Image 1: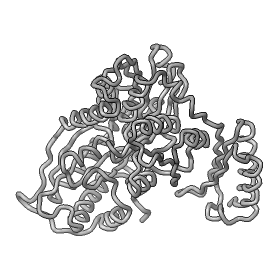
Image 2: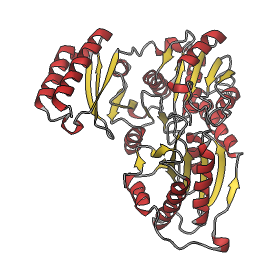
Image 3: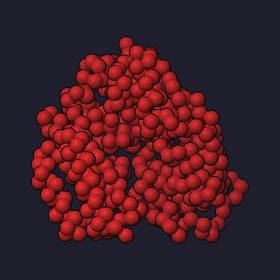
Image 4: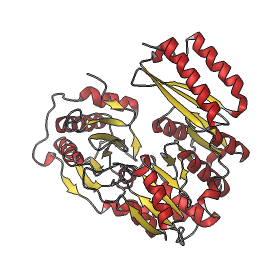
Length: 453
């Protein structure tokens, strides 16, 4: 059987790859593994469940709840809430387990199941492997009062909104940190459709909401953080100060300034790093970012006296680096940004609140981002390539070295084998788009010649 868990839980085409039967089995296996590791010792276990707005989330969340309850776990069903809300609520309620039914920014037909351990932290790889190994096993079922209860708990969403509101008030030192701002919110017809605008309004902003009419089928469809043109147009047409866009489960946030220009995750991270540095809350003056973050972010942080720790691509690697050293800010170019003082995972709504507070205090978002100049970046995906030889083929490495010499300190080259496909990603940054394209195309040609299958 192919490995079930990927870098962000179990995902697949709902009702084909990810079935109700598999959801039940995963929930039961998770309950058994955590119980045997002592996570439930001395008390009746409790889990928090939440989902995004996909129609398949209705039967999958019911299946997960059924599996957990059949294994003796009480379930608090929060309904439609963002992924970071489930992470927070798992910790805030003292639950032993959190489960999110979502495929984040993926198209509607996909769905996923992601588990959080006690405290709202992602499960370790070893725990995921143990759960996977127990799927479908025979087991002794509890009877009578031993089975779990399933309690609809829609009020939990308000607890999350209160939490992010308290975080932004602390960040800004103000009771209405977004007062005076007009913000457009693109909720991607997803989990933030209600709580996202509500959190921003509670902080004092005037909010114009778009893409917040989920019908189970339209999540991420041409809107949200993966389709920013809709947000950019809306900011200009409404004359707003800025706009923010979430993905389907609201663990990501990207933005647009008042001119309709896109503000990417690197720029948001840079803005927040400077703000936290000024407030004395950026631990060791360090930002954690992946190898895909733009060289312009590195240059800007260097000028500001802020260090960057680089990780592999994926929020789990950012989180690992942050937890190991105690860093307080990290994230990805995609807008998946983690502020560990207030969240255990990426939180798009919290990100939007803090960006808004900085704009309200210091001026237009365009000016706040001007210190982070994004260098032209070209990414070429070379398919049908032997990814295992990326770092060992001598001719390819010679070509990479030659490109790096020519670019010097004004550019960057990264070759990254895909973790799941026979594909090699060639990324080049340079002072001009022409140079970036020229080097990327040349290196992609070498990859095809040397590693083509």
